[in-house]
Image 1 (spheres, rainbow, N blue to C red):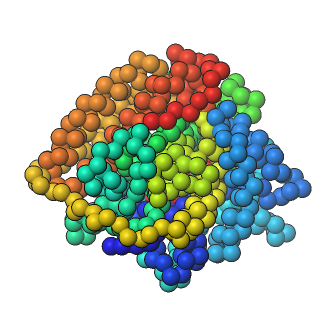
Image 2: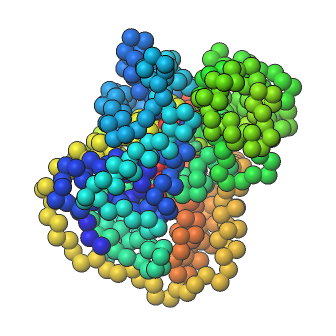
Image 3: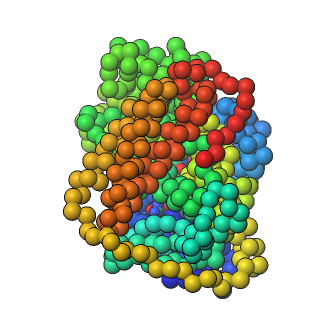
Length: 533
Ligand code: FAD
Ligand code: SIN
């Protein structure tokens, strides 16, 4: 297939960008591809909402900027923070025009929620299913567009660059260019070439690298791994955000149900197994301290008391209001026999968000020519060492917009003619005989990352993790070279790469900052640096 604009990913970043480029260039073709069903994205599961300055009487850009900088613990790019906070309201108004509905108070004003680290109420939300509502509005807008083609079940394998034309490419090679991608069509099991003039990666997060995560199974860090293989720049991978309150279910692995931070914003209190409201011992902001502090406090309480979870107490909250704001959580708890008016909710931290990713500039440009990145797979400089709650949907829309601005200019100046691209080489490969080799390696990876590269780290654990990852890498490469390509082997390979990038960056950072806490270096270094791999 050949297209003008190729968009990889159908979450908030990919869809926002696609709508905009399609509208700006009605004579150009826009192809959106996704490896799963159209709406199976991190976006769909977003609960709390989108942070934006909406009430200038009580809030201001400077307060939102300040809160973002405090959470980012010295590593945010202030210029980018300014851009996102100030352009945010325009982007939110656009999605409202496209049909997204946010909850309103009885007087008709938007209802603004509050989450950890925010000094004001500024979270627009749609009950506790904000992401699903935004995804719905975006998909309906896409379906009305005449020049957007949306295809499911295409697994993007690799970015095509000069490497595939026979040139030696290293990190130092200037002008590496993206010509399109190799894609595994999951219906035919054939690898196809998707040739494009401009490509946007919007492949989302990587929570699946850990044993328990709030992320769905698509979140395997594919975009980051592809760019790393193509010798592009990856930044700040050590900053993995663990959400403090995923619903704990004994023995559960994989995707865990989230109990949004907005529940604590409305008055929910964390308690340990003795019933103590322990957060007051850790931070004066108590249950609404930034996420890294709350997650570490929970981790510490669980370790001290030898428990697998703590409790979220909502029993004192107004039940009617709870059901109105959190109908999805209420129903989920009820289905498990938890009556929130009478019982506390068992919660534990789970991997939630990747603050780092593919390094981009203020226009979403990556270090590879004609390749943009937006959304969770990108490292724009907004989050620094820790993301402020509900800033990611906002960031995705702002950088989808900025990428569209730059890409539509670039395409005018670009000759669409490209060198002939070689077909995928399947020589010497056969169908995998033992799937267990892949599933077992995945389990090992998740165990290594959860045990050694989790909320609290130290040098011995990180070195151990690197040695285990080396072995997993070698075994997986051997398997990859000899088997016909499948999504399972590709995701495993991508997740090992991402696990390596997280661990390597964590080992480089000899300090504790934001989400990265190393007990061998509990203080902060004076040197402010981003780790680029
Ligand atoms: P996604 O929405 O994850 O989309 C990724 C897309 O890429 C998918 O379509 C996927 O199929 C596709 N893809 C990936 N790899 C490939 C490949 N190899 N080939 C083809 N396609 C591929 N943020 C907030 O701001 N507010 C919130 O309230 C909030 N709540 C959250 C709650 C939960 C449970 C979770 C998991 C996250 C939450 N977040 C929240 C974070 C936010 O939802 C995500 O960061 C954001 O939605 C990411 O959007 P995206 O467009 O970058 O990627
Ligand atoms: C939540 O609703 O608690 C998640 C918000 C976010 O990740 O930004």
